[in-house]
Length: 305
Image (cartoon, rainbow, N blue to C red; front, side, top):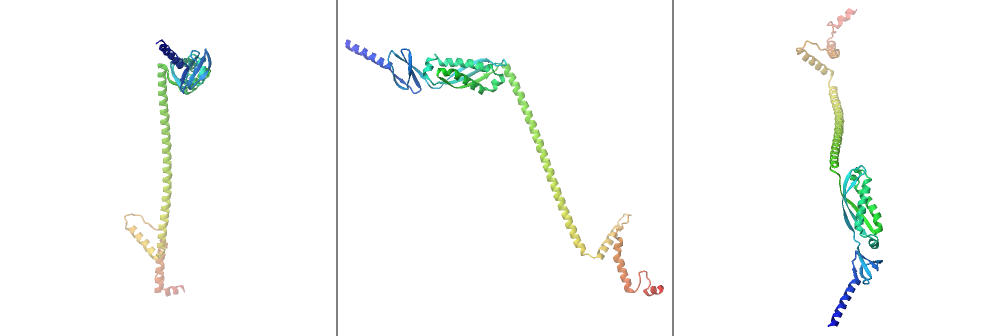
């Protein structure tokens, strides 16, 4: 019975020693081994054997982690109070210094982030802090990474979540934003009116050009029509003899004489109009042997003797 108890105790001790000696390290972990208090290296991933009571293994997670920095009250260069909170993303790139060189690297990184934020914001104007958030993120990341590098930690990103100015500054910013929007609206309206006036002027100019072009073409067409009409009248007039034209002139004068007007119209060509009739009368008298004054041709000849 006593032997059985001893065997059971030895089995328990052996299992305990085996449990203390064998460690399984995951892929995203590393095991920092301390032998009698001295760091002898980093083991893992996989199966790691330790000497019980002599070796001590400290697990370090290599995955990227983040911690939240609560809202911090900062003062800008122009004495404006701001409340800023942000996130810091980091990961362990060297497991040994993250265990040997710092007690709690996450808390130490948070403290460095807070002091760095106040130093950066304190060197900037309020407008720059509000407008250059991305620049602040890059500056914070660079300064934090410079400090945490000796701890084997890499700061991968810093993201400011919110910047909260005091109530009076928010009211002033709201008024400024409203005034700026009104100014932009007035500028846009003025630009629109100017553009509309330019387009109206261009439209009127084009309309005037088209109208002038139309009038010119109409004048040319009318002139061509007049010329064609005159040519046709001239062609017809060429076929009419002088006697017919004289009769037409006499008919016109007769029509004028029938009117109630007391004016007498004599055309300039009146003597030319009478030439055909005078010539006709002369030819008639010559055919009957008489002169235009009514005396016989023979008597006229005797008188001359």
